[in-house]
Image 1 (cartoon, rainbow, N blue to C red):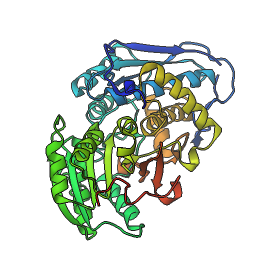
Image 2 (tube, rainbow, N blue to C red):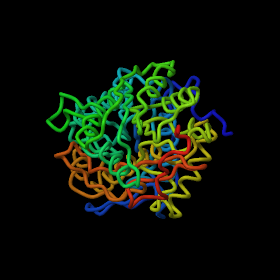
Image 3 (cartoon, rainbow, N blue to C red):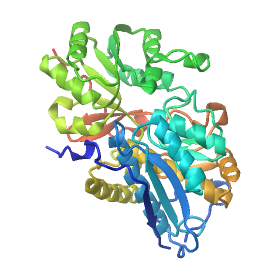
Length: 436
């Protein structure tokens, strides 16, 4: 059984943190295509005043388990960047303020970083609400801002914001469509679907859509399933601060869907599975939108067959290269030491992409001027370590197509089971724990 320490809340991590790591020089991009900045290319020694990159992360509060992942990934990226020569031939510092999982504190942190700390560049935070807050500050001050994740795609209209995890401009449509394509490729696709939706803004948007965007934003996963001919036998929203999953499990058992779609995050998946196990009930398949993988790994056999939304898994064919494996090993060592989830998977990979964007923009522009960085990223390709080639689309709020994948816990690994071109193995369907 694995240690639980990587998803416990961090004690007292609310101070301003500065990482300054210095070593040898780096070459800029060619202004057309930029390659990965943390890849370990050889160059001369970095000299001069450090380039300071500022950002807030949720090092305490309910988002802390994932915020810590982004801290470890960012520090590792900067370390490798400096070992490769820095940025524009100068060493790089990463300045982090704990936003305590609060939108207001995230906004205040970016104001402080820009106006008081006078950082040269900024990196976005983790979490839908904190990202939205940071983007408002970045836009007001005219800073380019790569960010790690964020599902409110209709609301992120700032032209100089560059998201790392893209399910397309309309994840309210594409995420469910991908899942149904996957299920329909099996010999025995489901006929009925149940929905449980955490009221967190992002999961609510993916499930139901919103009236704040355009026509394609107006409906979500529930409507996609209905339009594809599935019978929706359960549709229940639950509060983000839920503590008792027993009533939800009882509703699922009563509805008895073939497939259960849960707009969950954090510990939702593990807690709901435990509650269903207590009732001696499990559906044929379960998908959990943004729930944490670590608690499912610890559950072992009861979690077998559970699915999560994914962008990157180490089992993917494209992850089988020495650079990625080296990064993953270094990340695991640092994450274990800091009590973070140690697998270099979706959250860490999205963080890595955001840093690739920032480095590409600076090297491509050959400058720290915000307008130049923004313009370069809008008009050129970025070759990323964990996400391939990215071309931002201003028409889609700088999202760049659907990069969604589905990961399934099989045996002792997260396997990529969809889409087919990224599969590490086939989908396990029905799940072995399904109630007969």
